Image 1 (tube, rainbow, N blue to C red):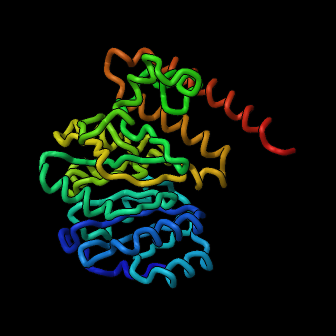
Image 2: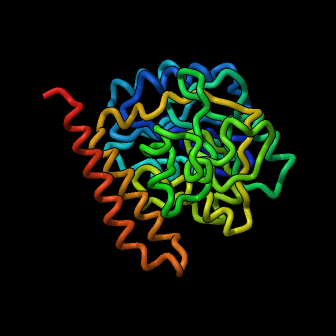
Length: 299
């Protein structure tokens, strides 16, 4: 099923192309699209790439929201692949990446596009992301390095002692930012990318199946002269990790595999000797989390 994607892919036909990659979360996708409905205008197109598509679920979404362009794909080649697939048919000057488990209460696409219009040197801009309980997610961070395993957003140390030095180094401005601030990277849950920058660096690296592809994109943008900015004046709510609940074991494996790929791809010459140690540390962390997952699930 691919209604609406046969339009001519000419950049600037739309101001913003909103790109959604869905995997089995039709309930959340419906809520996301419903929240966007009041803000869909003639300069915004919405493209949904539906991985492991379920005909009944996809048809219901298209019937409820006829203004979307839905691309149904039988397999699940990963988030980065889905973004690139949507970008191939997109006709916007800006790409807004938004997770299907996000909801908006304002014109996020218009606000981020307005800001990027005024700052033509910036390649990507991320919004403030709230959890469903209202707390602010650490959605703007430093590029990962050897300290991220200890001080990253989901690490034990961060949960137990969130103000420690390693966590503060990794998680960036967070709740403390009150104005647009340049950061290393922002989460792909809500990220607007300038099309020129996205094309210049070759889009998403599809070797990242899921996780860390957003950090990798921002790293390559920065290296090409396109900085990333966190804009806390614009916000969305993210019902984190709904797709991963369908495949929790596979999601853990993908997270650690992508973390190693990122380190192996971007570690400097001085850190190359650490690659085997990082691999072993990630494998040990993965094993511990898989055991924990198994023990926490019903028999």
